[in-house]
Image (cartoon, rainbow, N blue to C red; front, side):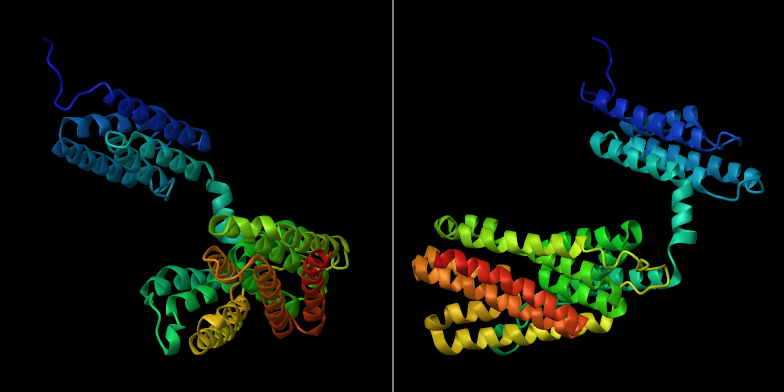
Length: 414
């Protein structure tokens, strides 16, 4: 019987193949990006390094550590000789990472291959990445981006995720999420505007932001209008598209909670969506803001103060809804849901679906309640639009949202 290596099985050939493939990929990218200079490690070196990593870990963890140390020493010596011609460390670090990915290919070949593609992409994108960091991103954008990332990744995880205060209406993490959402949506609009221009940039940002929070999107576009009044038409259209995305989410919510309510109310929901889509298209194609210059690198991505104010307003609405539900008991459930819709439409729709699923309300009451939710949500967003974007923005947003509610009510009346 022929001898076998410890831990060998046929599946290990996939790990070897993955290591060889990622080594070849990283090596060929490294050589092609620097054809005019003698690179520290090219195609063959990276392929051998990846194969060495998988084979060394296959033999024993100690062998892998020894190989990694040896490669690190050779990389350090090579850098000492070549740093005058190429002061960067990309090639040296890339070779060490190739060894690590080769070792990773033994327990997780798919993950190692995916990371190998990422490494190759980073090496290939040297010029555009340098241009992005040195020329395209300004100090203001970098500062705003760091503030957003710190708010989302540092502060948010540290905030307790539990209800506190009267009626258990306040959840500190939820409130801070609203602040982060407003900043993120405004930043998304800024990036989209710089990338594609005023008209389509706001439309794209608006529609996808609506799936996160249409109220936050309304506040973000209101801030944009206040900063650049010439963007009024496109900002109103983007706000309509954000609300279109928000209303469309009613369908999967009711489908999951109370399908019979959806089958009874789909015409009303569809009518509101049609009006919002028409309003979005009208605002985008009017073209009044074609001559307005897009934001520059020196423009602010968002207003932190406005985001805090928005979260404070939503907190007040949630508190009032919780108080009514506590004081009025079951009879106040629909009233509380309608008030809660002013802060978050989808949670209120889920409450409505649960009431209908428990047969606490019939379909006619559910229809009335849905119209109440849409009206309350539209009214709250109109107030947000007035407070963030001014009278012209608020009146147009209010008109569009009011027509959507009227269309839903008209379908029911028919």
